[in-house]
Amino acid sequence: MRIVLHAGFHKTGTSSVQAALAAHRAALGPRFLVQTAALSRPLAAAGRAALATSVEPSALPDLRNALALWLGGLRLRSHQGLLISCEDLVGHMPGRLGRMDYAAARFLLPEVVQALQSRFPAAEVEVLLTTRAGPDWLRSIHWQLSKHPDMVLTARAFARNHAAAADPGAILRDLVPLLAPARLHEVPLELLAPRRLGPVEALYDLIRLPDALRSTLSPVPPVGRNTPVDLADTFVRLNRAGLDPDELDRIKHEMVTLARLLVEGKPPLSSGPPID
Image 1 (cartoon, one colour):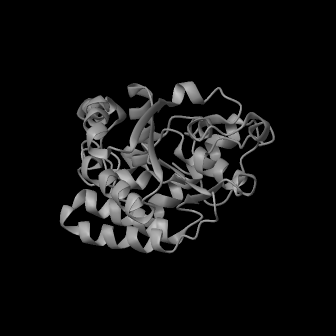
Image 2: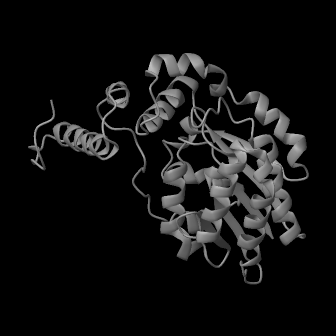
């Protein structure tokens, strides 16, 4: 039995991986059970527990309980493996709730792997982390965080403050012995994006999915891409303005919608008063 855990990092094609796994799960079913937060409420709960533990390590017992509930409820057929993708299992992304990097992954991922090995002692566990070139990754992380009202740093200031997080080499090196005997794999997003099925190909490579089956799988459009217009610093200025939270969300939503319509060459539809 083989288990492949894709645990992030955030903004490295994870949403696209999960969309592809959901689209392909019927075809994969005879060989692998697919688990993502969108498909499994218990896994989503384990992800939330990992996020909480990344901020407050004393919440570790809650994470262990959530992992036990999730894995205890899985029923695999004979000769069926497990494909998992959930980036929350490495904790909050840098910039969220004071996190400067993925240091919490050093104790979160070993807990997840240990839980997998305890539930499936005969399984071969492999952990996949997708990465992304530093400047692009920092811009994407900042854009994601600018949607939250507590992000008040410009993209340049955020990149300067979190430059160390853009080089995950130290964490990857530390994780190798911490996860053993599970094997750790790191694949850059830049190598996966051009491939026919996109970032999910990294998982299919690890499970050695036969070409005859892989060729029958349809590509899934990319998910979670940035807006075609850079709105991050504009969102930061809005975050600093002290607006009502509902009004702030409405303005941001309308700006994103308008930007996409303009890039697509479509006339904007009025859904409210004009934005100054």
